[in-house]
Image (cartoon, rainbow, N blue to C red; front, side):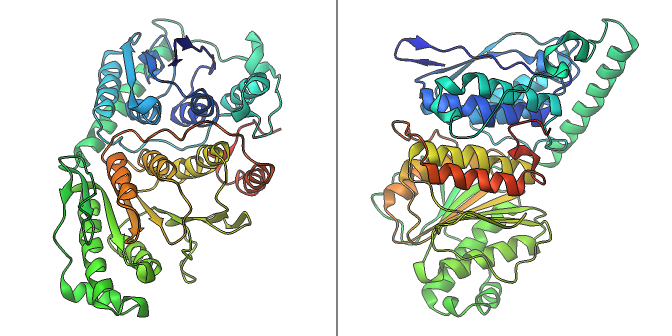
Length: 455
C-alpha cells in the first residue's frame, strides 16, 4: 500500500493448509483495518497463487473464487486503484482459474460464492491474534478491540507446525488430485450460475434529473403482474395507496430479475410511510421464490417483522436505537457508531464476518427514515455487502433521499469504488463496548467473528 510517497509493509504468516475462511478472516481482522487507517492512494498486490489449492509449493487450500473475494475487498480502497502483479503459482489449472477470477473481479464482475465452511482454523486465529497484538501499539484501528498475544507450539515452534509435503511424495499427489476434483466442481457451479447480463438496474420513481448514473445502468420500467402485486399489498395497510402499490410492483419486478439471474444488483425507491411494509414483502417474496439464505441490513426506523421465523433462512441486522443486543443468533441490533473508526469497526468486525458466516444468496439493504448514514458510509456498506453476496444486493431507500445518495449507491452496486470516508477517528468507548458485547454473545455460533484462538 502506498500513500503520498510512502509505502508500508506488514506481514501475516498463515500455516500450511489454510483455506478460504482463514484468508478472509485475515483480511477482515488485520489487513483491512490497517489499510483503512493508512488510507492508501494505490494498492499494489503481489499476486502469488502458490496459496491456491493444489499448489505444491504453498500447500494451501484457497480455491479460485477466494481470490475474487480478496480482490474485491481490496477494491474498496484507494478509489479502486488496485494493481496486481503476477508472481508464483505452480499448479497450472489452479493458477489459471485463480488468475481468471482475479481479473474478472478487477473488471467489476461479482465474485462467485465461496465454497467450504466459513470457520477459521485454530492456527489461523492464533496468527491473527498475535499480529493484532504486535501491531496494536502502532495502529488505532487495532486498539478498538481487545487482543493479547498467544504463544503456542502450533504457531511458533518448528515442532508444532504441519510437516510440508515432500515433492513427488504420495501425499502431494493426493493433494493435487483433490485440487483437480475441487476445481472441476467449481467450474460446474460457475456454469450453473453465469454472470447476469445486466450488472445494475434501478427502479426509481420519479427519476431525479440531478441523478448521475453509470452509462450502462438499466432504467427499469417494468412492474410485476397487477394481481400478484395487489395480493402482496393486501398484507399491509401501508400498501393501500396507489403510490405504494406502484412502488411495490416495480420493486418485485426488479427483485425477480435478481433472483432469476438476469440482473446482478438493484436500487429502488420506496414511499417513506410504506418502507417497512415493502421491506417485509420483499423479504417474504424472496423466500417464496426459493432464496435459501437472505441477509437483511435495516438502517434507521425499520422494525423486523414480529412473525419472521428464526429458521436460519434469514439474518436480520438492525442498525438503530441506543443498545446493542443479540435477540437471537439471527437477529442482531446495534446503534450506528458516531465516528469513522467506529463505523469501520462495526462493518469489518461485525457486519462482514456475519455476512461471510451466513453466506447469503441475496442481501436486502434498506435505508429507512432517519438512517443517519453519510453518503460515503452508505456507499462503503453497500460495496462491501456486494462481495459475500456474489453481487446480489437490492438496496431500498426512501423517495425523499438526496439524489446524490442514490447516485453513489448505484455506482458502487455497479462495481465502482466507494468514496473515501475521510480522516480516521477512533471509535468511542461506547461503540467499542457495544461491539465487544455482541462479539461475546455471538462468536460461539458465528466463528468468523473471532479474532483470537479459543483458550
